[in-house]
Amino acid sequence: MMRWSIARRCVGALCTAALAATARVAAQPPDGARIYAATCQACHQASGLGLPNQFPPLVGSDWVNGSDERFVMIVLHGIVG
Image 1 (tube, rainbow, N blue to C red):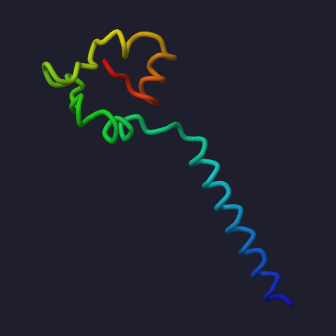
Image 2 (cartoon, rainbow, N blue to C red):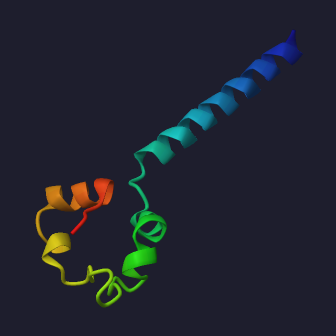
């Protein structure tokens, strides 16, 4: 009987730890650097300066430094033009 009690406590502790870890991960904001590297960097370069006559710079751009709503929409859906 004692063996099962210890096993249940161990399983309970592991479940609690796993749930706590999941909550911590879910509570963390997205990693912007990782998103930029995966989504934007190929065209706009690591520096954000873009490529002349191909991809515009993001550094100092009103598109990036303007409203938060517009910036979020660009990150989520991109922009053409």
